[in-house]
Amino acid sequence: MKIKSLDTIYRVNTPEGIHLTLSPAGPMPRMLAWLIDVLIRFIIYTITFIALAFLGASGMGLASIITFLVEWFYPVYFELFQKGQTPGKKSLNLYVAQDNGCPVTPSASMIRNLLRFVDFLPLFYGFGLASMLMNKRFQRLGDLVAGTVVLYKEEPLKQNLIDTQTNYSPIPPPIRLQIEEQQTILQFHQREQGLSQARAEELASLSGLLVKDAKEGQKTAYLKRLGDWIAGKQ
Image (cartoon, rainbow, N blue to C red; front, side, top):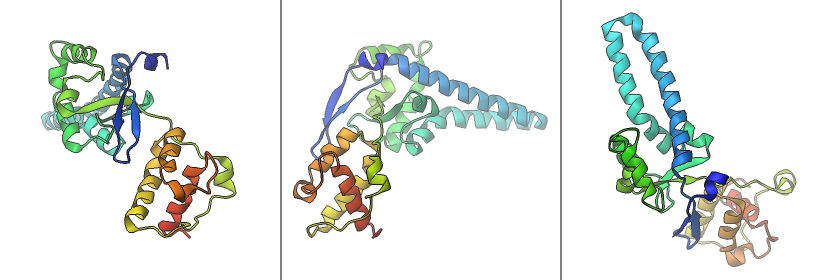
C-alpha cells in the first residue's frame, strides 16, 4: 500500500458515463512482478532442456523453439486469457489494460510485448525505466506505442452474507424493459464481480426507477437478482 500511495492516478469516462479513477503501478511493483515471471520462465526452460536432453541435438533444437515461444508468448497468453495478469502481476495485484480502462486487446498485447527488446536496451530495461519515469502513467515505450498501462486491480465486490444466504433469488423487473435495457443489466451482472463495492453501487444507482425499491447499499444485489431472472434462472 505504501508503494501505491506514491503513484499518480488519472480519470477516464466509461460508455456508461461513469468517471473511473485508475491507479497506474510504478516501476518498483512492476519490477517485482517481472522478476517473479522471469523466475517462472527460468524454471520452465530448465525443465524443458532437462526433459529433452536425451534426444540429443534434435531435443536441444526443440527445447530452443519452446524457449522462444514461451519467452515471447508467455505474457501475451496471460494478458489475453487471465484478465491481464501474469502470475507475477497477479501476486502483486496488478493487471494490464488499455489506457482508457478497457481490457487489453490482442494487437495491443502483441505490440507491447514485441517491443520489450527496445525497452530492455541498453541494459536491464534502461529505456523502459527512463520512459516510465518521464510520464505520469508509468508507461514504458511498449505501453506508449500499444496504448496500454499497468494498473492496480481493485478489490472484487464482496457479497453481503444476508443476500447470498437468505434473500438472493431471481425476481422479475418491476417495469417492462426494452431489449437494450435487458442487455445492459446482463452486462452489469457479468462485469460487477470485477468492480469494487463502491463502484458497483455507483453504476447500479444509474438505473434510477428500476432500483428505487432497493435499500441503500443493496442496489447491486437487486440488479443481480433482476439479471438472473432475465437470464432465465427463475
